[in-house]
Length: 104
Image 1 (cartoon, rainbow, N blue to C red):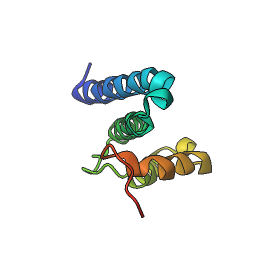
Image 2 (cartoon, rainbow, N blue to C red; image 1 turned 180 degrees about the vertical axis):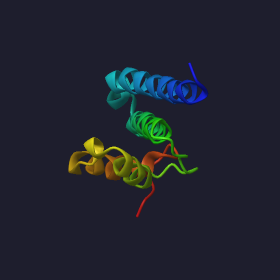
Image 3 (cartoon, rainbow, N blue to C red; image 1 turned 90 degrees about the vertical axis):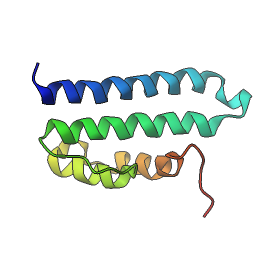
Image 4 (cartoon, rainbow, N blue to C red; image 1 turned 90 degrees about the horizontal axis):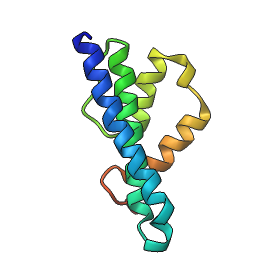
């Protein structure tokens, strides 16, 4: 395995951990009142997945948690992920990167 593959796999593994946490917390999150934490793990999983895609296409992901910015970069590299559904999801989760939703 080359360095790029190893790095991509590390990002995907961490993304998978956040996805697993999301599903575990989703099962009990509403009754526990921790939906913000559920959303945080969803945001983290998607952020890491997008960074893995960017690296896979031989680019360097920016140091940002902004899903819309990461999605823009990834969509330029891989047109299959350029969909309104992905952008809608990114917009909904973008505020949860710090673990809480920012009031606007």
